[in-house]
Length: 252
Image 1: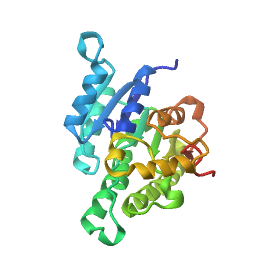
Image 2: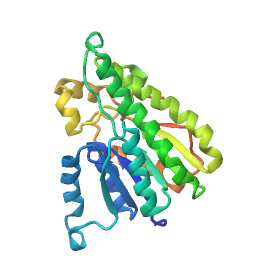
Image 3: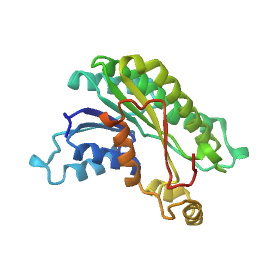
């Protein structure tokens, strides 16, 4: 096992984010788990702490933060710097995906989706890159969406935001490569998480299964491994790339 790293994960209490946190903790890394929901974060914190010596996982630091707020992100970065000096890995996983017909999309909702998904990724990366440059290396993994390859009805703002993250990933790979920092994108297919179940009809999940080469539901666990790979030394010469993880829904 390689030396323990300091890893920052946003959207840490979500279905995908929590599995990513689990993977890094299992591998012995220290994780700063950030989420906007204090209640959801506390629930997951209890799970992560369960069975740990003293009732608290020594490598987990759960922090409430709003990635769409420049002030909140700056506070998160400063608190992380004071505690760890440097950061090795940043996983930009937080996102929202309201399902609304385009003609009913309000400007307010459009802006909210882009502020969380796209601007939040920008703010987090801008705040944490200095902590990676200090060590002369780093891994940034952004979570996009396979919806950018085919479009998804009722999710215009979401798809637009994820398309923006793809472009941002490629540009950052060019700009940050000189510092030994890699920047890559993982594009999940429709993933069967609790949050998705609240807005996605069962019929749509069934349709997606039929469109895949691997005809089953995609789970959050399916994404933890690819994300961990891109954050590892095995991917040291991989940057600016899109790793599509959708069970063969799109063959790129």
